[in-house]
Every structure is written in structure tokens, then in C-alpha cells.
Image: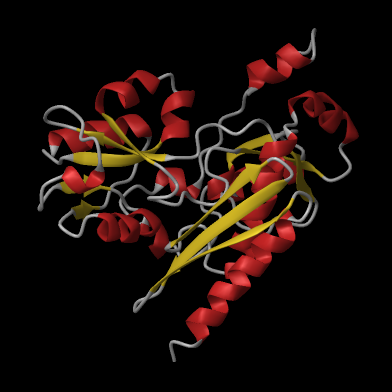
Length: 284
């Protein structure tokens, strides 16, 4: 992102500041057990509010639905591949998930991924895993597991797209809904920082921004937090769009789709969550 900002603003020089968060430092605990939202962003947002940094770059799928007072995200860069991918080990990649034999072990600590994997292939087993991409790949292969689920966007940004081609089984949103805003970077700034916004404006991609608005409105209204067993994806179809989402309770899997006209993305994301919540309420 620093290179893109500099390319869009000739003569500008940026400084990258790496800030470790609670989510980065604690690797032996499932994310859903932290008990707080924003385990990958709190320390970074504090640095932004204090003026230590001027821009925070997040993976938007890891961001809580609500932001702290004084911070905003109004610039959205172009979305990377939103799909999940299973990197397989021990032979040629499978063409579809149903081809993986019963008992195959897939590494993932995501409740969203686990519940959808089990619906697509009930014979699969899952093992929790944490760490960066390289750590997950290495550990999964060392353990003799048959695969690990990762975000295609993360692999592409690390220059590892060839691994997807060689060993990857890409899961289309029709099969596995991604996390809300998966593949989108969240550019967070202080409210009123016009200078930083001017520098970022050339990177703004309106279609990606509309997708983020729809999917994060769903996240905000479903009230499950970004690590809950739920997902959402917005497809842009000319002057119309579709927003599809799911939520898994202990008893039932709920998945619904709404269609709307461009400009109504946030309203429809919220309405989709409301519909699913109404369905859940009838469980009792």
C-alpha cells in the first residue's frame, strides 16, 4: 500500500511503522475465546488517535463493525480476490471439495469456514491453526494434514499466487461465503485529516467501496462479531447488486439473498441481517 500511495503522489515518501496487536502476539488461543472485538486493531487505532501514525492499513475483514470515535474509513482501494482457497498437500489438488476423502484433515480456526466446510463435505475433519500465512502452511504440511484454508487475497498480496495454481482448490462464494469485506483493505484515518484523505483519494475504488458498505452493514446488524460463524458477499451486476449472507446457530444454518439497485447497498446489507435474525428468533 505504501508503494501505491507514493506512486499516486509523486515526490511523497512514506514511513512504515509495524505495530503488533494482541491478536498477533497470542498465537495459542482461538480467536473466539479472546472475549473482545478488534483483537487485530486496538493497538493500531490507539497509535492513530495519538498521532503516532497518520494512516492505519487493516485487513477489513478483521475490523469490528463499529469504529472508535475520532476515526473513519472513507477511502476503499480496489478489492483483491474475495474467495477462500484450500491449499492441499500430498499430491495433486482436488478439483472440488466433494472429492476429498472422508477423514481428510483441513486446518482452520475460523468458525465461518468450519461450518461451511462441513456442509460441503461432511466427512472432513478440521484442526485449529493460528499464525501468519507461512506458519500455517508449514505447520499444516508438517502435521501431515491434507489442507489448510486461507484467503486467496492474502496469498496474492504475498506474491504466492503460483501456490494457488499448483496446490489450490478455490471455493467460489456460491460454495463458501467469505467473511464480510474479505479481500478489501481498510484505510483508517483520523476524522478531519484532510491532507491524508487527499493523498489517498486516487486509490479510491467505488465498486469495492459499495461492496464493503453492503457486507459491513450486514456484519454490523447481525451483531455476531467478525469471528462469528457468519459470512456475506455482495455481487455487483451493472446498476443492480446482490447481497448474500449466512449465520450458523447451534441448531440451524440460515442463508439468504437479497437484490437491490446500486446506491442501496448499506440498507440492503442491514435488511438481510434483520431477515436472518427474524428467522433465528423463530427457533425458540
